[in-house]
Image: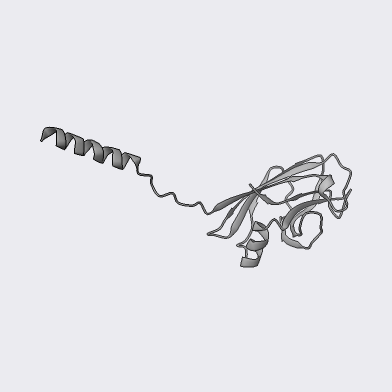
Length: 143
């Protein structure tokens, strides 16, 4: 009887130890863009570079991000709607404080904006006095 009880307890311990906890899907989606003059349309010759690192929360619909850059003095920076290799209109202005690194967040995205973001149809563009239409650009891509 003692062996059966010991064996039963051992089987229970093994059964519970092998059970996985239910994993909860994170609402966060990470985005990144490497910015360069070669990504501009048409391309721009520059030594400037930059990076966009962001996290989109599917629950709050807010994209938080950090911008960094070097080799230029921005006069404007925006998120535009447009596929890689095409130009498009401004969706979000990113403010007028040009520091590196710069951290901020968007307002809550609409359903259409969320769809465009997830589909890779947004890019970041930094403008300068040297290149008013854009000196460096990078496509926002899910990581």
